[in-house]
Amino acid sequence: MAGELVLLDFWPSMFGMRTKMALAEKGVSYEYIETDPWTKTPLLIEMNPIHKKIPVLIHKGKPICESLIQLEYIDEVWSDTYPILPSDPYQKAQARFWADFIDKKLYDPAWKIWGTKGEDQVAAKKELIEHFKTLETELGDKTYYGGEVFGFLDIALMGYYSWFKAMEKFGEFSFETEFPKLTEWTKRCLERESVVKALADSDKIIEYAYALRKKFGAE
Picture 1 (cartoon, rainbow, N blue to C red):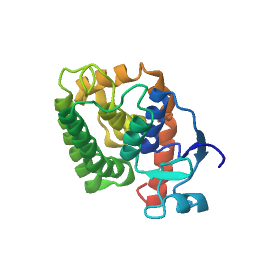
Picture 2: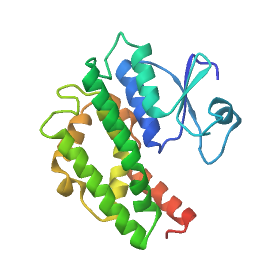
Picture 3: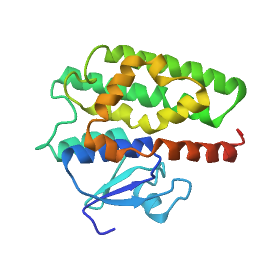
Picture 4: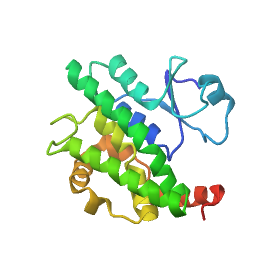
């Protein structure tokens, strides 16, 4: 670990994809270290001793944990380039609120859609669709969540994009049918090189989800 900026991450992580998007938007180069979260490496334990989770952004030897915190850190440290958070205090507070909503409301039912079966899976699907509809309502007719500018909240949600196809497959629903405005929003986001390069292959995510289903006994 010789670089000034290092990212400990695991390729399917929606949270790590966020951090990679933000770094790409800023044009910041970094060293990438693939870190399987199921194997607690000495470096991971050293850099994130509390949670022992990825992603961990290491800047000049000092760790920054949690992806949303990393986005803010990146925005503040490399403030002379593309702004990620809005400058207006109210808009900034709103972006933080909805990013928190995403992590508190999406992760659990999304995991249960491919990680469980039966009634648990059905309940998870209902909950997930409800939360996505709430996010679609918040988007409204805006180009991006912040208005005309791609930013913090767009990155927070697009981190999940590589998992959308797995959600559809195991949940047996169509993202485009259920959420047409969100679908158009994803297409606009995918026009950005920073987003495309950060995302994992959706088909490989499905293969990974199948492996996890077997591991958790959901097959």
